[in-house]
Amino acid sequence: MKRIYSILFFILTLSITIFSATINIVQEGDPRTFDPHFGNDGFSLRINRLIYSRLLEKNSNMENIPGLAKSYKIIDNKTIDFTLRDDVFFQNGKKLTAEDVKFSFERMKKSPRIAGVLPPIKEIIIEDDYHFKMILDKPFSAIIDSLTHPALSIVSKEYLTKNSKGLVEKPMGTGKYILESWSPGEGLVLERFENYFGKKPNYDKINIKIIPLATNRTIALETGEADLAFSLPPQDAITINKNPNLKFMSKPSYSYTYMGLNMKKEIFSNPDVRKGINLAIDKNAILETVLNGEGQIANSPVAKGVKGYNSKLEPSTFNKELATKLLKPIHGTTLTLATMSNNTDVQTAEIIAGFLSDAGVEVQIVVLDPSIYWVKTNGGEYDMFIGSWGSVTGDADYALYPTHHSSAFGAPGNRTFFNDSNVDKLLDEARSTLDNNKREKIYEDIQEIIAKNNSEVMLFYRDLNGGINNKIQNFEMYPIPIHDYSLGSIY
Image (tube, rainbow, N blue to C red):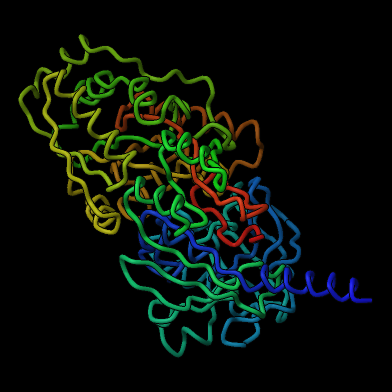
């Protein structure tokens, strides 16, 4: 009998350990906002995906799974019938209904920051508290994938009607976690929402600390300050794997890294200059030096693995002699190059500056804190910038529309201010084309046009890297850099 009690006590203790645990995570920067409809940067998406919920979600294999909607039926090419779960509560205790869904999508339409994300939804027709029809302005082939985007989170009508800025002051959703505290520049703490409708996560709290330098994030992992660390340089794999308590994680990603040319600047109106800059940069050297040869040289703004990726495109090749000749009209010019203050981007910028200097063009690198970087690149302040874009929905529409449609200048994603009427037309056409073969052909054509324009230097598709303490079990990385921090258990 004593043995049975001992076993039961051990099981109970283990259960308490798992469900009362705090996981410590370090990341590069702060969320810009806790209002999901006004933030489309990676740091905001990581946190808001935990505080709020969507109609549909993506798992770590980028498969669509039910969210707030337990089912849906496509009636025709512009009508979808949704059935909501009837057991969803907001974190203030109020029950979610179709009214909140209708209010949320109407509110999304008023936000310029997510204009490139929002599907062409004409209206939400409520049938009862848990049934509604979504009516589109026009057929939209990527609608189901798009509805999984964290920026399309559902919010409370009642909460925001009382205080329109409520989510900025005190975020409140139906997600797995509640924001307990936030110290800008230092970190934040999330507390588990005990009345969450789905599977309850194992961590009682998620403690997120902001450490901009990758080297220091690795140190935090080694000292035990962090259980999980992300965006680590591949060079740290050896150090981490030597530690018996740690493991280096790596996964091919849907993340595309590039150097954008600000097309609002007169200097880039010359196509020879744009081509010269592309030819002046040895991408293989960047891949080997910055990423230890891991990842893949980019041939398109759509990452490999994303639906609609054009595998036929050839990356531009390094040609110093031709680049120097093409760049002769701007020899002696100094161009500004903005980058966020993380090791990979800064090192990439430094290598690019060296190659362009060899071709006769000087570069002034401007290293910025992430929050300042977004504001200034959205406004087109610098000549060039190191950028990245993750296809959060796993579809080419999201990889291309926000970053290359002329309606998405600045904050929605088009920070090169790329403007091509043919690309606009094709992007709109792809959205309304339901035939997958025809749709893929349209996206192939779009990627060819963008590649020939040379408005961006397509650098690489990086592997997403991180480090984890072995006491964390069953954590799964996503192929996009907005991992679900709630996954796994502490043992």
